[in-house]
Amino acid sequence: MTAHIRAGLCSVTFRAMSTDDVIAAARDAELESIEWGTGEGEHLVPGDREGARRLGERTRAAGLAVASLGGYYRCGDDESITPLLDSAVAAGAPRVRVWAGSVGSAEADEHERQRIASRLRDAVGQADAHGIELALEYHGRTLTDTAASTLSLLESVGMPQLSSYWQPTQGAADDAALAEFDAVAPHVSTVHVFSWWPMAERLRLSERHDLWHRVFARAASLPRITDALLEFVPNDDPALLPAEAATLRSWLDAA
Image 1 (tube, helix red, strand yellow):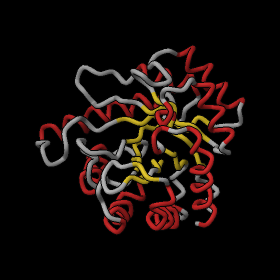
Image 2: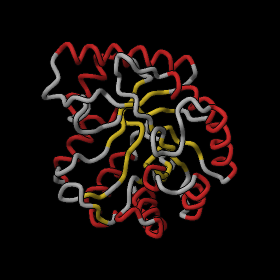
Image 3: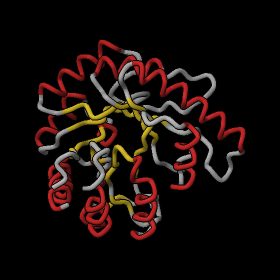
Image 4: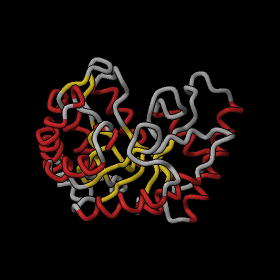
């Protein structure tokens, strides 16, 4: 059993629900942690320290951990990481998720790569001063859209306080997705869990059982991974959460 990996929820899955309703849904589904989304239309406003403090307290009072804050810092020259870090400290979040720019790795020139690496080094240094880790969203149209580009960026930043999330690339067959996971696995701290196929069509988790069963069998030997977070469900239907959570827990228990 992968006891070190918590089964959790990304609050963006139910962004239309109140924070109290998200907490209740996660608790009732017997999940263990929540990644709270930040920004427009989500559950936390970056820099609202009092709101973040209260949300962190309510999350823990329900028996859930604050896994992380889901941020949208994209390493822009005019962006500041400070509001996100202020909220993370207030909420008691050990990690903040950020994005490696807004340009895919195939389009980014060397100047853009070095600029993003520099911005990340600065942001990681600021976060580390607060005891917070940063992690990169593994996503298209960023420098973490492939395993090779993610590894290159992590090497360029060169700071162990920076980790990566992982999720299956849209359209990737099981073997291709697993090869990507294997490549970045030593750097992965969080997994976003969903079953989309063949592209962005949302399926029930169990419909990609073979992929996720193999992912978590590998994750069992990776102590850096702390959370497997459910992200999105078909039709944004909260009634599906208990069964989806049970599926996720079964994979973690079997690993």
